[in-house]
Image 1 (cartoon, one colour):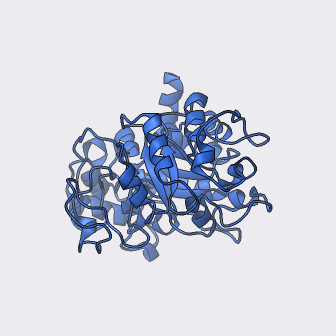
Image 2 (tube, one colour):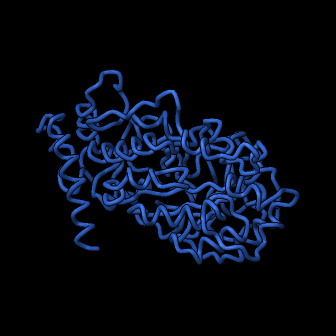
Length: 378
């Protein structure tokens, strides 16, 4: 496994490096990146290198690499996801996040990484889906179950769970308690993607086991067994160079609906800043794989909603603005729910559960985010 990982990393680094060599002037690129892929390098030099590495004048002002994203054909984004939907499944789906994706909308969430039923029920009123954090948090499955049952039903944001892994035992628990979205981190190959997809759905399309659980209480009034396969959304996260190297086989996996980047981890594992052209070439490779195989594409970091060559195609993000402009009160209970968004919110310190920004378009380009010791980071 170690040799395989090293070969995959070397393959991606060499291929991206060859493309970059053809597109960049050597002096600015070296000055921008320095050691460790540009972490701590001067902001102006790094931004200049990115601009120089983007050959198409039409992308002036957008952060990108040496290659441009592929454009959708007449089938558009998610054509394979749409093709697999049964015409007998009632629409709109009770999975609001998936329904909006099928309408080619951008979906956003609020991350919840500690037990707070009141916050969950309030968040459901304003977002497309809720990101329950089970990779980095210390929540129990029962705490997630209790939150979902605190305000069940089809009205509101869909409960998704970011899993600790793609093991059958954990995906079984997540689906049985009523989650309609499974987000699997650090997917390196098609085997992990296959497990994420098949354990999330019942036969004949998957191999989810029939058993007990609270899903019936979470979704009262719906024909759950007949409709959950179409309502389930399976999201895989590519966060390593091995995953980038295998992006096409991951995206081609039957039952995977969305492919997203875990932006901070990909930066950490590659050693490249998120505005480094090599990093941008890596995410464009993943973007193109998702498009080719008819899946949706996204970035965990909400900063990718604007300013990057992939921004227009980023359909799925962790956190981001609420659809109705609602903002959560500050920690400690100050502030009123339903208040108008604060001016300049995008420049404020991220709330504890949001992805920190590395490589924000425009202005000063920050270095690596400090370790915060909390859930919700990528």
